[in-house]
Image (cartoon, rainbow, N blue to C red; front, side, top):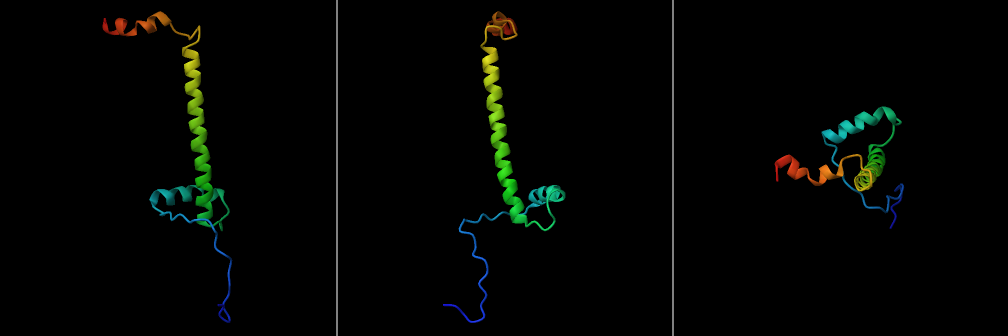
Length: 98
């Protein structure tokens, strides 16, 4: 039922909302990026974009770490790893006399 004189505004999003507390750490982060965004940008929109970019950065960091570990494995198991393999095999004996 519509009421006379009632204004129907924009339909809210169909996506679930996530409440976020603007604690001191979040407030500081928003203040730090404020000079980089348009002044009338809604905080919720900025938090949304920062969350997406943060997720991408975390995934890129994980990928970088994984690639680094793979390079170390490949290097250390190669025919010429850059260190004395015999010393590495005997490291406990040489270090601790075992």
